[in-house]
Image (cartoon, rainbow, N blue to C red; front, side, top):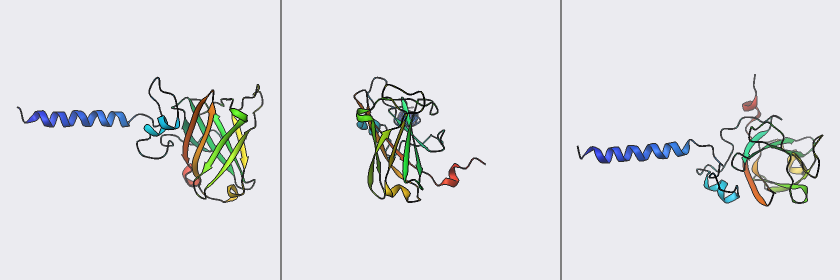
Length: 175
């Protein structure tokens, strides 16, 4: 049966490749640090870390931030021209207060291209300079549209980044 060996090898390699793609995007190797480079390496070319995540607890768009250690939820209030980012735990639900340099995160929107410094606005009970909520305003946030972009920051000396893509509001209806 020498003619079956190439078919078996091809089939085995295919199974290994498919098994690797089933893992959640954005997860670094067990001992790898969550960095922009590590997140990009696990991106599978999609350019987004949002697949596999539903709406967050604040009905915003969720993205993996740090290989599953954290998640970030993007929400926008068009009337206030304000974005709020919530930092959540690995369960995608629990508020997780973090300390960032200068108490800030950076929101970069792709279209129209602009950036917003998000300042820590701690929830009740969050103390010692830690916050799970970051808020910023920009006139372009008043545009009613689905935003896509990147949320970045530093926690404990480790840089974190997450790409997100809002979906049309009809896609979030849970009727």
